Image (tube, rainbow, N blue to C red; front, side, top):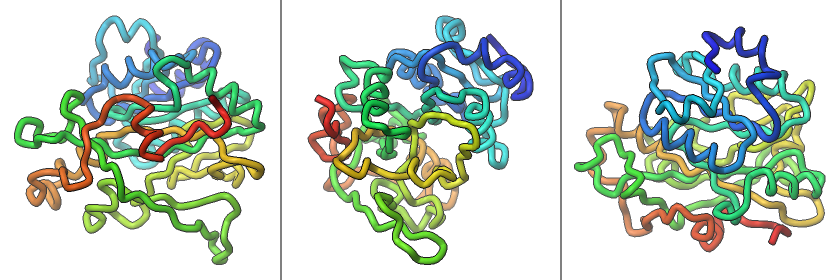
Length: 287
């Protein structure tokens, strides 16, 4: 299914969204578009909706499995516009959103589907799953000048931390934290202060009146919490080349970076166990 614009998509969401959990994949360019879409199809989403410019190609075998919406993801407020349109059309459904070169990993995802994980979250009376954006980067930038390589992917194994989140009145928000680390921490001089956080409520249940804000938080405070009040909840990771790609593309930083590797770099294993062993994600009470 191909929709020429967002309006055409919103008129036909019953067909486009199918059944089950929905993955919204936003293509800013064509880098690893196929692998990103394929990863989320394989994760078990009931529907995968791909937003991006019409000239970004997808492999034929993938095009038959997704709904394609022509939309300029480089436009101002593109992310909020897309996700909030899906929210309005998908009340009661679980939604994931991410960009190309971003890959969702959750505990035991190698042999369990995203639907199983979300069913568990729902049993715990959770309507959201906190995700951490884990920066990936190519180990050899001379061979991969755009910093993207699935075969040579690296990540930081330490350097992650959290600070108490406060509202506009300076009050600490219950069970909410601002998380930092990865390339946005190491190269913070090149990252605007309002874009340095690595937490994103990347999985959530849509409902009437819910609104995603530009900082990846929602207008319902409970959606922004990392756990329920009585024990730890399952969390997930969005393993992303997006920051590395941007740092290399930006003239202000690209020429200053010869390598993203440092003493705390490690090869990315493309396996959820590595992320659990490093303490980045946790299964909570899901075993």
